[in-house]
Image (cartoon, rainbow, N blue to C red; front, side, top):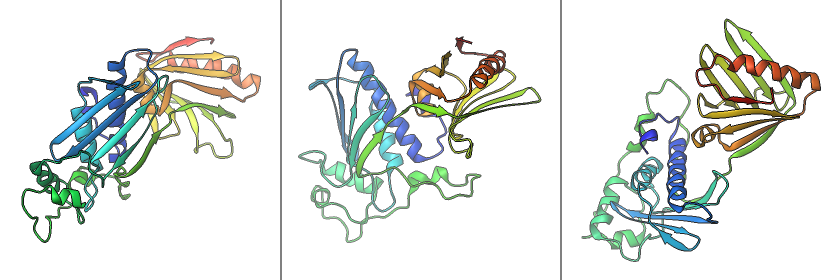
Amino acid sequence: MDSTRNKRWSSRRDEAHAMRMAVGDLARAAAGEGWSELVVRRGQVGAYALTTVTCDGREIVVEGMEEPFRRMREVSCTSGHGTWFTCELWFAPGGRGYTGRVDASGPPFAEVPPVAALAELTVFPRQEAPGWLLDALPTAPPLTLPMGGDTHGQWLRGSHNDQPPPPPPSISGDLSYVPATAMTARGFQHKEKRHRHLAVLVRDTDAPKEAHFAVASAGEDCWIIRDRMRATGEGVRSLAVDGTVLRLELTAEAADALETETCFEVLLDLPAEEIERLRTVLPGILRSAGDAPELIGF
């Protein structure tokens, strides 16, 4: 978690997703190899929490999940509705994706400690608390429970962006993340200006800004960009051209930044002369990069 704790996220949704990815990495590392299903369940009320990790039906011990789940609940808080009590995540081998669900109404345990119920309503106020949570309070609650603003989202305010902040992560319902594995490129552009290079492969030549894959460089800095908003400046192990396929091998961190799997392919639906131009352009762009990826097939 040290690598993500101080990172500045563009939204609470992004941070909640990153925390779920961190939970998956911890579970995979503890499970080792040869597993077919990992299930992580977190139940929490106040500071009282229980986390179970099941690998192919057998419970295993996984360290380090306290911080990502704590932060996940915090950034998911919705003003007047609190946050989730239960989060379940399912992971399958061979990919970075996950499915799951969160629940902000049902009890996560058979018995809820009174001090935990009181802490929950103090830290995450609700306009309407579920009956089981009220029943767990040490004394009768006041007629009006203390209501606070959405203090967990205040770090987003004062941003240079005048657009309203995106909604917080869901606190009830299904979760799903399916990383991209491929795209088809039907257009290729190369731009050079003042020692800056940009090579762009676009899915739709009539709407080049809607979906694209790009390689950009300026001096020793190099970036891989996908669909404008996703980018990484490191973690690209190799780029390979194999016939009409451009294949990237990425570290897990780079794949998550691009929202892809660690192997991502660009299918080159281009004239042969454009593919040859791509073979020439990409090495020229990447040659001066400080940590250039291995080039294969160029």
